[in-house]
Image (cartoon, rainbow, N blue to C red; front, side, top):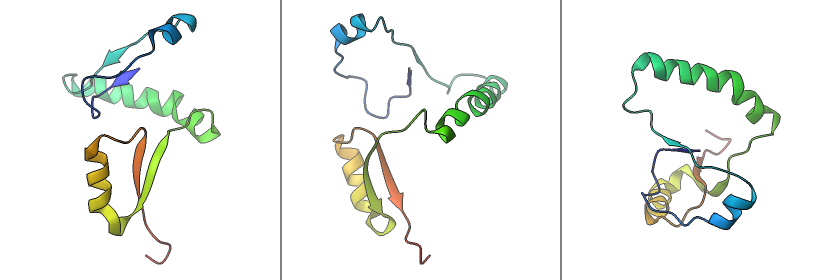
Length: 95
């Protein structure tokens, strides 16, 4: 499932793996959809997806973590396109 294109419009894809897994590609965006439809999608995600995330069945790949004081470096790393997963900012416990 592809939602959005923050990494650009081109990607490498192993078609052999896609075929052996009998998988498919679905792409969409939410921007042009009416607000009511977006609200329904959000409600379904809360109902069906968040419980899987909370249970650890669905995970989000984290590429790299930066302290909030390194926000500029995090943005530069993100903009470089080198990341393969989320780039996170963390706060110290003292804040």
